[in-house]
Image (cartoon, rainbow, N blue to C red; front, side, top):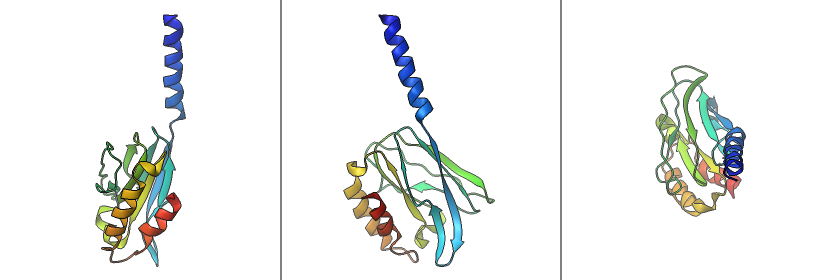
Length: 152
């Protein structure tokens, strides 16, 4: 019986590892009027998946502390020096809505969302905070509001 339970546990753990996916988000300079964008700006993943941010030079991905699910870890990737370089890879283990930004280009509306599993754990709070942050954008106004519509 012990051996049977052990084998079942190993199979369960290994199948969850195999099913985890790595998703990619591009950090792009873009073209007017859509300069400084993440593509996709809203990405939906499952618990255990990772997201890797890559792209044009002088961008990064950093979590927005006001838009994280309770118990989730924050992150701050390095600034890329050349096109195609990776900023960071983040593993997501807590359901909810994660807001993120490119640190030097946040004021231009270079923001996005990672939605892990069920977004309802913090969607209301995330929406409220995103709207406050969006008011401070010098450009790209309306992006957070537009992206929120993709989550609901």
